[in-house]
Length: 356
Image (tube, rainbow, N blue to C red; front, top):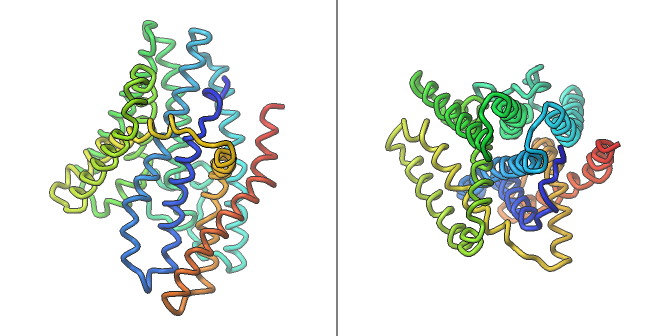
């Protein structure tokens, strides 16, 4: 199964770049917290960005599956093995390399989080709780990886045992996983939630449906592409406005049931309607090349940025407001540069092996 849905969409690299910027900036605020604690309000944007990352993954995976089905009128186990192979070459090498580096640095006292366990090796560190400190930003990666493992298997099963009709098995699979995420949050809610962030937002069981709304949106885009293209800016503004409204309700804590169960079903669907703006975004050639490179490097940058921030923050801290702002800018530049170097010299050479 070819894992490229179509030719690369430049606007989605712009989206990746913006999402990466918001997440990296939010984490880099550790250098400005002492002088500008109000900067932390940007968590609203970083959460929005993480949801978009998940939705984008679902959108692209749906494109891969649908394209293969359209070409062959079937999905086979061999197709899934090809998908898993290509996905593994993208995700696993850099992930395990970063784990190995952090374990080494932890043993020599350079990287302070010490709660590594075997669960990190199989992406289970946040199965039901997200309160780990060793590579804490991987909570969203594990959700995506378990989805990428389980959803194709679900589709394969449905293709085999359901009567064939256009896209039905894929959409049925999507609705199944939406229900799984909703029910899991309801179960956790019914047992009492002490920490929404640890028990709801960052766990695999309660966020396994985070990616599925990208799958659903792929089919919305497929059938209503002209409407979405014509109204892309309006949809972006409406999406963000409704996200802010839902997040305001969340912050006010009016209803534990809304916060724990409904919020992520509602918000992830809302956020998905930001995609059309970026799908149809046109760029001049030179900016397009820049955003494409950042998009390609984004996984390495994301993986490496937080350990790098921890290491530096543990040794150097600002002594005044001006220094804290300089550190903020410097850390953003440094994490991007180091991540890009990892992409050029580690991730990309490994990726080239997957087609051999």
